[in-house]
Length: 229
Image (cartoon, rainbow, N blue to C red; front, side, top):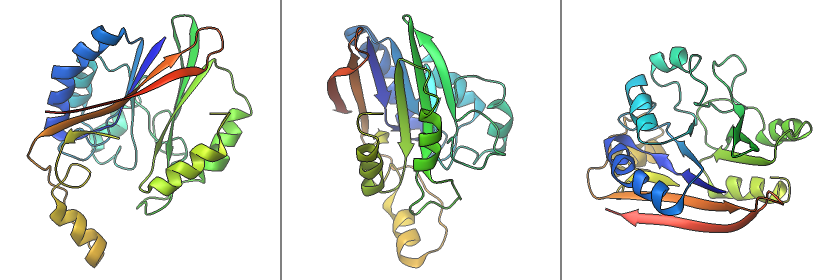
């Protein structure tokens, strides 16, 4: 079985890339499950119900997120009404929506979990190590996919290494995380809030294609997919 994981879909540029490129990828590689991070898909921050429906129509099966998931008030409501949009499992326990789900694809039980890093995050989150360890104690699946949404590569690498053996972005090509650099620099230099404005330039698609062995349930091939439009 093949699983496609797509990096952070940013703004209109990211959505258009998914519309034009995802159907081709799914047909070419015979992908059985597509997972994507969508937390910046509406104007670079959050996701509206309209854009949730749009991305679903393009072939995304499960959507994950991060610290911007509730930037739009409407998301607090509709995340409770759908079964395929995740918020970070280790965020505030009073936040609506699931942080992990169990689905079945081609007779395989697949769990998808969304976690949030703690370094440089503007919102409080429980230690992701403890959250994941508690979840793994009652592992009930054949395959477990984890989207760890964090600001630093060091934090991501450390968590991956810690859970080794147990367990990027689609949008504007220029700028910083898909936005014009001015706002990002102001935040870093002055410590003041600044609105992120999508960088209008060429687009890029980033994701990974996982090939799973049907007997061992282990990944036997990982292919990085990157295309600049």
